[in-house]
Image 1 (cartoon, rainbow, N blue to C red):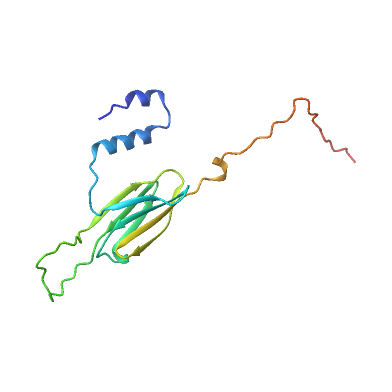
Image 2 (cartoon, rainbow, N blue to C red; image 1 turned 120 degrees about the vertical axis):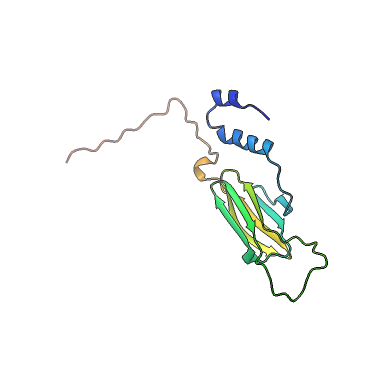
Length: 150
């Protein structure tokens, strides 16, 4: 465990980073369901989760602030037509939380062959993108326009 108190004394705006480090050091991530995080392009990502046996209506995605919560809960079938001799396919409820970087948005989600694909894209606002500033020569004359009274 790291003591980040000295960082907090001399820095402004790093409290979220410290909180993330504290959470990462103290928590073990659950292993179910397994997932991949892929980079598809410079600003495009995809989370793929193995959710065999779940239907799209059993899955809920919620974005709150910079957190993406994915949860799943199967409706129980109690029709009594069969009994399991061996049940190796997990169907327990789950909840996964992903911390999203600033300006990363969820653009869609789809199910395909037991895999949940969540599309993400980083959309940097125009005000935060780098821009070029023209440099003018020092002796450039300034033109002042005045309106004459009629």
